[in-house]
Length: 189
Image 1 (cartoon, rainbow, N blue to C red):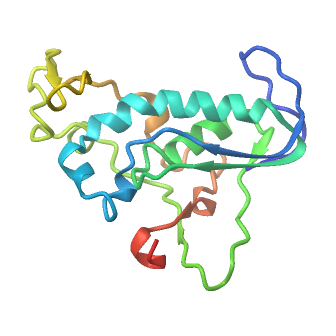
Image 2 (tube, rainbow, N blue to C red):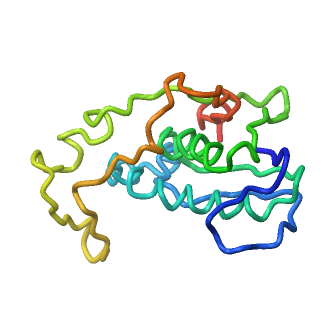
């Protein structure tokens, strides 16, 4: 992402635009690290991406306000889920009203990178499957402990926000194919 015309005007407290470059490596579900940490697969739930998406977007917006005009920001997660990646970038581009633009990354030619998604399945069945850890059929809120003594509880119903749904050709092109999808098995990472 690159600041093109002016700094994003956002409803965040004013910060000095002091950075030429920012790496915004946000908290995520970590589903892209399952290959080296298989225990994550047992804990993986679709709704975790839904619950963390707003925080990811907030952190990306905050980072964007600290960029100088002409500065660059890399938004990064360890997730494969487009709700945590392309959806956040798409919302960031919309919320900054043209102050940011998505540019293609210049990476070494021997490094395998896949294009970002412009569209993904955002139906409620895809985002909140019934077999996803016991989600309630009727949207009732139930708490479920995530392991002995973990102290972590998660609501079984999560909210699908408009920022999680792809544009599907509405408005200006979002160029989300410029997002880089780096899959662990492509580069043996």
